[in-house]
Length: 340
Ligand SMILES: Nc1ncnc2c1ncn2[C@@H]1O[C@H](COP(=O)(O)OP(=O)(O)OP(=O)(O)O)[C@@H](O)[C@H]1O
Image (cartoon, rainbow, N blue to C red; front, top):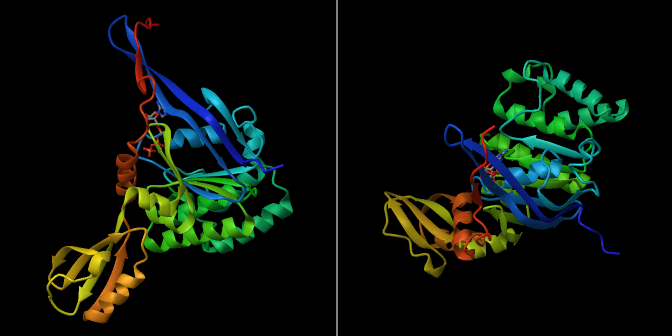
C-alpha cells in the first residue's frame, strides 16, 4: 500500500465570524474565509516552505495543524491524529516555533524553562538529559543556560526556543518566521541546524517565512497560498520559472567603465561609479555569468543578491492570476444579527 501523507490536509476550510457593532441596536457579522478549501500532503521527512502575502491564511493553517483552531470544514490529519480532537496527544509528536513570540518563561533562566518542559511533556529523564545536551551543544547555548530569557539577544532567544520545541523529540516541527530579525551569522547557524535536523533525524518540517533565502537553503518544495487558496505547490526552481524572478549580480570594477556587456544572460540595471548591478533569471546559476565577466573585466569584488520573497510571490500571483475568486466574497457581511 502506498504510504499516506504524514500531514494530510483535504479541502480544509476556516471561516471566522467577526462581530461588529454598527449602531445602537445593530451589529453585523463579517464572515472571513481565512482558509478556503486547501488540500496538500507532506510526506514524513519532507521540509516544505509555506509562503504567501500577509493575511493569506498561513498562520490559520498552522494553528489548525496544531489543534489550536478547529477547521470549519474538510479533513485534517497529522501522524494519523485529528489535531483538534486529540490536541494533547498530538502535542507529544509536534514542535512549534513562532519567531515573533516565545514559549520560554521570560523571567526564568533558560534551563528552568527546559526543566518545566521536561515535566509538562513527561519526557523520560534519560531522554531529556540526552536531548538537552545534544541540542545545547549544537545550538551553542551552554554558556547561556543560567541567563534569564529576557536578557538574551533575539538570536540567542530563538535558538533557546528551538531547543524547547525539540526536547520531546517531535516528529514534526512547524516553524513560523524562525530567522526574523536575526543577523547573518545567527541566520546561518539556525539554517544549518535545521538542515541537519531534517537530514539526520528525519524530522518533518513545515516552514513559514518571508525570507526567500530560508526557503532556498532549506526547502526543495514550496507551497504558495493567497486569499486562503493554494496557488502553487511544487519545486522552488519551478516557482522562480513561474514567477520569472531575477537575482542581481553586484560587480565592483577597478574603475568606472561603460555598462558591462554580459551577453543575453544578463542586463545592466544600474551603474554607480565603478559599481554595476546586473539582473539575471533567478532560475539560472550565476557561475557562467561570473566567469564571463571575470574573463573580460578588471574585477575587485562580486556578490549575488537574492530576489525579495514578496517580489517572487507577487510575480507568481500575477502570472497565475492569484487565487481564483471564491464563489462568495471572502469577507461577507451577514446583516441583521441582533445586538445582544
Ligand atoms: N481569530 C481571528 N478572527 C478573525 N479573523 C481572523 C482571525 N485570525 C485570522 N483572521 C483573518 O484571517 C485571514 C488570514 O490570517 P492569517 O493570520 O492566517 O494570515 P497569514 O498568512 O498568517 O498572514 P501574516 O503573513 O501576516 O502572518 C486574515 O484576513 C485575518 O485577518
